[in-house]
Image (cartoon, rainbow, N blue to C red; front, side):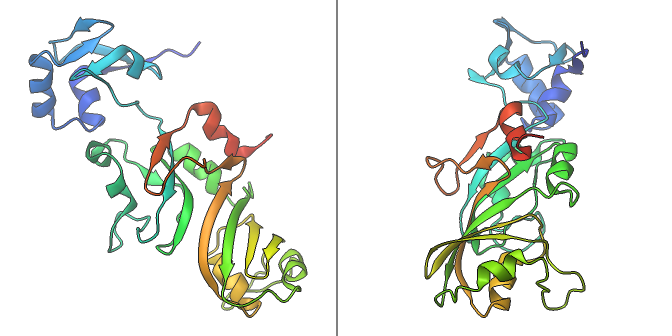
Length: 246
């Protein structure tokens, strides 16, 4: 059985974004922190950092935020960027303000460009992030594309051939699966993550993507009730659905 990580109360709350050491010390001394029904007033109290902490600890009468590792699923809206540095409205601004100063910090698992909506994962678990984006795993990602011009009918064989070469690249794309919905709409499942890959694939076929929405990553599907800009914390079992039946 793995021994639970122990952390000083003030350090734990500071790492969860509840403020500076001074801020959380005031929070604790003010009797705002309750663990297992008991008010904690000693900043040096050692706390077991376990997954059930939000069920055991209250901050200002509300459950404490989950400790790391944390995995979120978000319905990324149009117009926001998946970057800490890029100009424009950032996806992290859609999260609670204190989550933006957690330590370890949160990062998106891969990226969706500003003009693409849909499923994006956000985590502070570096191992999980790298497992999902690793080129060796070929995690499938499915997109719904709205096209400017009607499909010709030859795109499916082109995308699945394993021979399509994107402009400026020296290695052909891995086979991808196209499912036509109607002349202007199709689902495309890819197992790579090259720069603007879906848009460039349709451009190579003589078309232009007007709208692009990611519906799934691996075995994880964007919930229908998750509105644009909303997020949800995933359990460990839910997060592992990305890897299917591995």
